[in-house]
Length: 192
Image 1 (spheres, helix red, strand yellow):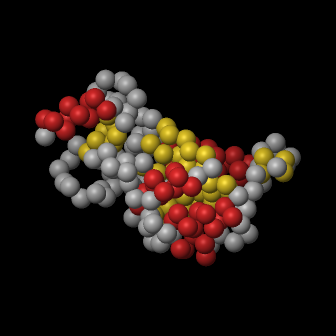
Image 2: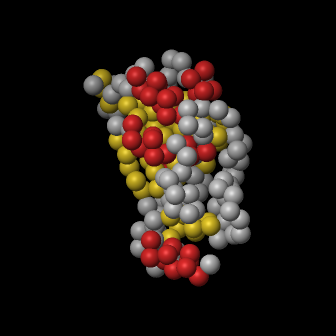
Image 3: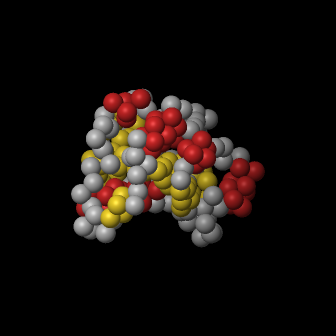
């Protein structure tokens, strides 16, 4: 382990995944880790799927309005092309990326890059979402964060969609989704 002047340890080659439901603080945690790495004078590059334009075309923005500049991408392969000579790679909303993101993250970690990935672990139906299960499997560290259920105050389990539609990908926030615990989610689904 290499210690730099700020005390932030640079441990070569690892994958960190931050996952959970919407409104759980995934992006907030990603931004916190990336800003800390920048403060430690590490070379950082941040990526997000180009379809996520909720708050900004080019920034990763949390629901609390914290932001960090990023590069929008259409394919996980683009990350490898744009991350040479980088210490830390951040990836937001990884559930929207293609399955190739798993190999991209492995390749970066094997090169000695710290990879920090944030994404929804499940879709609005409670089904594991995109490449997230595989990313959790290969990660050196997985942190599951929780929102609070808007119905009862328990830890949220899923991002419940409150608008009509069965399309799996619907970019949205509080008008489209609400965090619910398992019990409240079961009640909502049974009433549908």
